[in-house]
Image (cartoon, rainbow over all chains, first blue to last red; front, side):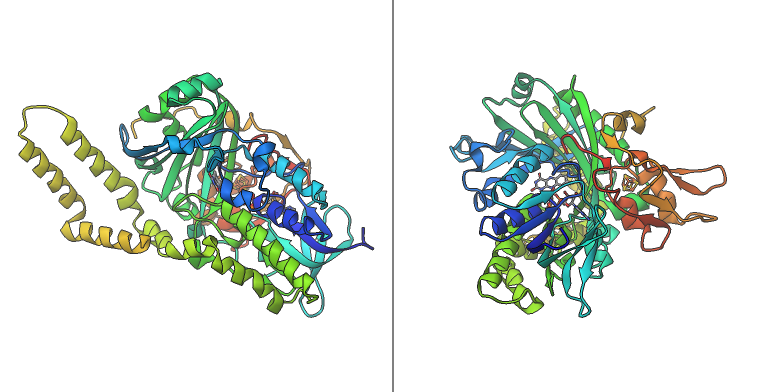
Length: 435
Length: 99
Ligand SMILES: Cc1cc2nc3c(=O)[nH]c(=O)nc-3n(C[C@H](O)[C@H](O)[C@H](O)COP(=O)(O)OP(=O)(O)OC[C@H]3O[C@@H](n4cnc5c(N)ncnc54)[C@H](O)[C@@H]3O)c2cc1C
Ligand code: SF4
């Protein structure tokens, strides 16, 4: 292998790496992809909602053979306090279209399928191989990689770092910093198995329809965090994630948090009787636009979670990973086609393509959201959910209190908790961060 | 929260998972110390696999067999040099069946 030189080496066979490797290999480039897991997907964790549009741009007919679980027709957003939830729910038969918009997937299975497509496109994929170091020439240009498989250097014109949120190689080579604790969330997740009909019944679904729940509130114990429950065909993915900085400050235990969420009266009945088959943990980049590092350099580009490309507000990550991987692959193809070298100057094309896409536009839109939720986590994740629950209960519980007094009590509770100015301030800050 | 989560053993959760342990080659090491920093101490409850534990002398020790390679401890304690963190060799470590 030492003698061989590749047009491109892709590190990682997750969403971003597979998109990049497929894009380049299908355009005739000689691609080597390295993955440390026993098989692609064996190290990867996701909810997981997969967004069709971004995969269609890579593999238009993916529906023919991709392992898809259910297409989503319903989404619920819940604000929870200890005994209740108040929420918004959207279900539409329009989502029962022929080319469904969103699917739940199981990452270990999905990544295996995607990797098969990458190999069919002509790339060489080597699993059970951890890249230990980036090889650089005397000018600092990245010229290849070193792995734990052989001591030898493998050379390539360009290296695509699709190494995920931990991104050891890029940080150790000084290409970017290790993420800060306030910019990454730790999520824990379990897979609960139930017969397909039971899931259909509990969520009012038929024929591969799916439903997802996103929940926030006292379940995160004042930390900035979200919980989720996604329906797969014969299983339910359930999990919760909070900022690492908040975990460190509160010393909450992630699996206790998950256990409490599972035991919440609104959740317990949905997963009752299920068999748990896996417990997983993974980080999610949540720093948003302001945390995006340098994305390209001499002989390298970085894509996906390694580049912090994750939209925490909309819980989108895999689609940003696939899109950044595809655009990096297209940019590399264009540079090569023009007969130009893989220099920083030429690879800037990747960044300009990414800037024009939804990836950077969406992240820029929410650039102030991470800081807001981080510094105000108690208000947004405990105080408001409790107040909303109280307000709803005041409204619904019928006793002999006159309605006017009930409304006054509700208003007074809000003002007592946050003061008039606090309420206005929170609303303004949220509106600005959302804008 | 009123729900009491008693006797919750993370070992029972990890038992569901598949691992190929690289015996004798732990991928995470804790630097010898007298007293743990706040972050290192926090790992005794924040690590989702409960790999970190306080010994009788008040020092933090790691047994990385159940590690899910999430990277949380690296984010919190690598910069200070308190821990040394690497991926397991290719093919070793946690192997998610579903992920
Ligand atoms: C609990 C949870 C729920 C989520 N839910 C959703 C969701 O519903 N929808 C959504 O769109 N996104 C979701 N995300 C985010 C999504 O999972 C990520 O954005 C996406 O996986 C990023 O893809 P990636 O290819 O950049 O990284 P990864 O998928 O992490 O892939 C990185 C790959 O690189 C390999 N690797 C790393 N270092 C090396 C090395 N040195 N040598 C060899 N190989 C290496 C790894 O083994 C891995 O296979 C969720 C994330 C989590 C944790
Ligand atoms: S990587 Fe995650 S699971 Fe492994 S020891 Fe560190 S915190 Fe625990």
